[in-house]
Length: 315
Image (cartoon, rainbow, N blue to C red; front, side):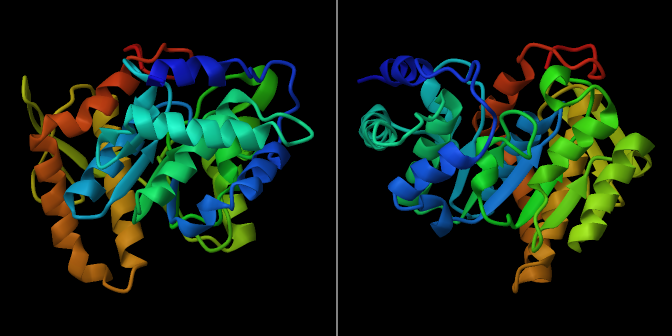
């Protein structure tokens, strides 16, 4: 089967009228041998910029030499794009084989998993099979009850800009939505928050304090745009060397700022920590020059703009 054939089968299990929760995903992954337990993760949520930030981070980590998985949605051209390793979508044959395995396991469960829960399981199986060093996971909706939140404590959790979205599910205030998205924060991880409203910042800070999670907040006043042209935007952040982002728009610069802050926090938590900083920064420029690595960012930027507080450009 092609990727689109698999997509049609998976989409048949819509989440409409299904109670949100993690039980179905946990049961499915257990039936598959818990592939997520063999992986290390970066978990990203937010209302605006989470897809772009996830794609940037995956691209940079791959350029730095890490075998990097990326689980993101939606796709632009092909269903396979949702499951990438070092920028390459899952091949049709592997997707067909893993989907058959996941659907067979799902059929044995008391309550059949939803389409996104099935996709989550396919992704985790593929990343484990591919031997990924690190997997960047974009939350589908919210955070606390999103199927991706079955993962163990990630290496780091990133919360991008939060706005009013899916209010019937997540809540009608920024504080309520921030609380739902803070559900990805687990003891043992590090957290990076895109600097934004006090209402959001207070919620995230409180959750981090309760769980003893180190929190870093980005500061847009430390971001300097050096130039902007058809090849992208050159900028510095907190006195860094000039970096090239092959994307236009102020919001993409802020996404890149969040990514840089995350990378610093992540690598400093590793044993080889400080020695990797220059390698990571060099990789940001390598990744930006190889624009094919950024195609998923472009596709995410074309998502429909349904977030009330997002920039006017379609995301």
